[in-house]
Length: 286
Ligand SMILES: [Fe+2]
Image (cartoon, rainbow, N blue to C red; front, side, top):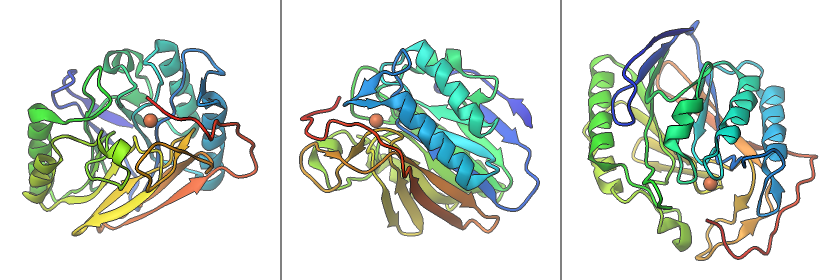
């Protein structure tokens, strides 16, 4: 149940508190869906509506009850309104508390206009004794990411309150804040990542940072903070290569259980038994 929603603006706090019965918070990260304007649109040969529905079906089979879904950007391929309308329906199949943040392929304005009633663009979500922050690393018109002074100030403000109120924090954004060992996509990482980590390290509440953009599983750590990225619901990128290459792994999602003590159980799950076409020899992706 939604209790409150504050100020509407890309750079101001939009806080929401969800009721929770206690125990672990069960969430799913669904990312980089790249939905086109019309159903059946493709990315590198893959029908992205078909692959998203296959991932939604997988979440429903594996997870049963889900408290909230986090959509961490590139949810549309070109920012078209009809893509967000369909996206809302896909997410609604999983649960009624869905949250979006923008990637480089999205239109923040269209996402904002098309969100609701069960999909929010909140940047601070409170549930149980957790605070989930949804940051905006999009630079409109550019592929690479940057948080900028307003988002970093908001992050600092939210983390200060988390420490004051004994909350654990999960920080979400679209672009990767650390290099992942692929030169072509590391050129697009968060430009002010150093400042981002300086803010995190001024506070003690952050348990994990979670992002999209890289279309592959990443499970790293920086001190006690887990650094996590996840498969796309459509095309996957081959890890560890200097140049772009499509991977033959299947679409997937990340599940997370957030515990009262600040610990996290998490893993990746991929669709099995469904055939997807994809252009494995494609030379590029923008
Ligand atoms: Fe993407």
